[in-house]
Structures are given as C-alpha cells and as structure tokens.
Image (tube, rainbow, N blue to C red; front, side, top):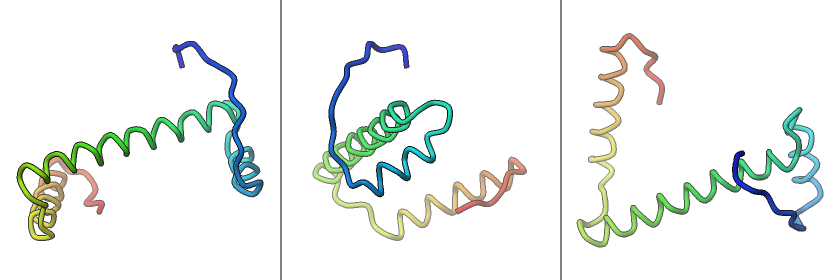
Length: 85
C-alpha cells in the first residue's frame, strides 16, 4: 500500500486472528487485515449504491438477475472462457 499507515489496536476472536495469521503469509497479518477491511469497505459502498438505485428504480427481481447471469455466461462462452457461476 502506498498510503501512509497508522498503528491501531483491534480486538477480535482469537481463532479468527490465528487463522488470519496463518493465512497472511509473507505479507504479514497487518497487510492481510488491511486487505480484508478494504474489501469490506468496497462491499459496504456497493450496498449503499444498490440501496440508492433500488430506492429510485425499485428492487432488482430474481428474473432480472438470472437474465444478466445468462448474458454473462453467454459472453464468456463466446470468448472461449469458462462458464463459471
């Protein structure tokens, strides 16, 4: 990360901290936790965007979601990529 860093003290369940420490590898626990928090912030921002869009346009239906998934799968097939869910 190129941003300035700060030192913080956080509390979390020991089993989660140990699992994160084991998975953090060479980058270290701080980088692992920072990446996890960054992903959560992205999700929170996306959820806020979805809430605003749904307030303006109504909720997205299951049928609309499936139609978009079908389009994505078709595009991947046409590009020769895997048909992942």
